[in-house]
Length: 501
Ligand code: FAD
View 1 (cartoon, rainbow, N blue to C red):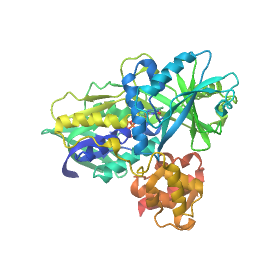
View 2 (tube, rainbow, N blue to C red; view 1 turned 30 degrees about the vertical axis):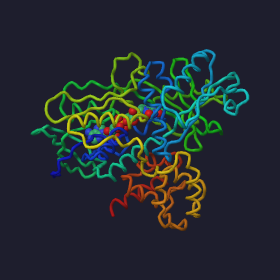
View 3 (cartoon, rainbow, N blue to C red; view 1 turned 90 degrees about the horizontal axis):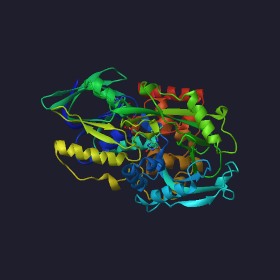
View 4 (cartoon, protein in one colour; view 1 turned 90 degrees about the vertical axis):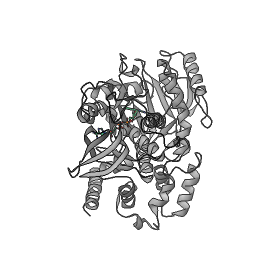
């Protein structure tokens, strides 16, 4: 099968970078086709620490460009997606055996001032002996600092970029693998395979963006046929989830004896998320899984600070991802640059633009830089526009979350407050589209457990490319942490029936 249309831009990969570029490009008037071989955000983009952050520790590696850009991006993204991004205060306890307090204060002074910051409050010193944030910690920690960053629902950020791109006219295909790409008469002929049916199709495009994340080198060798693809350093990072370790709404950043840091983050209301590790990875990115050594490391690092030790037996869930870092030759994995590198393929003919590295935090800026490369190759169509453009459901003020929840609960008295809050966190103003003219609990349809009803699943199938139960319970929502096997099986059955219909 051949789609005869000649697309301007073909994007390989539906992670944050691919979807961010597709959205920016279609908004500037280019025609766009994006293919993702699994589900959107099924790669690294749903396995992150979920922070929109400057990266305090990158200051130690003199990554000033990256930190400045990332710090400034926090409030831009917060304004564009206040449903899935919100401010988070971090507590950094001073540990007498590690970096001195004056150095931490100096670093945080820089952190407060080198990027744009209008909404987020600055750093303050905290007395851990008297403050509630000191309570969960061992009594030996008496002094600490509190500073600002933001939280993001990473997988939803990806899906909302894809949704907006598609609403503007981009073709977004999931479960669609790019199997080969060949230059022919100045354009690309891209062969894609539908993973659910096995059918193949050829798509023509002027230019390819390789946003394959950890697969970027594999795409260069396996899809494009290059023999010298060794640009990326794969670095595994893992997280554990335990029942919540405290009642306040702050996060912790802990220094470890090895010079690294870990976070302990409030997660999904009832849990604490602890991560991450940094270790080189040489396997297939799809097979990455937390190791026993990583579990021991995270439990020990957190137990160094929390009064109640974090035990392996308390872990309710864990996950692991692979950072596709640009291989800058650094000796230790934690020292490899977190900045992104955009590299045009040197071969003659139709352009191929590759992405190495990057952060969720800087995806929008990465997309703008990529658009400059695209413009230089196929001509300019329009100016940058994503700086002040709400993502779907994010068209309400950054401090208007509670007002929106109250409005939703008033419009839909069938919802209990917790359900209303979750819908606004997930869908923002699109919660009204989701709920439509529902008036009673029965109108929400089959209940799969923990507030997940058929009405929401139908919305995710119709609007957000959800095809399998795992798409719904791990990426569109995080209900998977709570649902048991029978409940997941019931959801699988329901979605299978929908697919067959
Ligand atoms: P991916 O999300 O991996 O997307 C690439 C996609 O390409 C995949 O979905 C894959 O299926 C698809 N693909 C590959 N080959 C093909 C093919 N042949 N055809 C079609 N599709 C294909 N960043 C932050 O800003 N904040 C954080 O707190 C943070 N924490 C992190 C913690 C960890 C442990 C890790 C691993 C990373 C973290 N990051 C963080 C970094 C961030 O997650 C990544 O930089 C980002 O998600 C990379 O996105 P991507 O789109 O490049 O790659």
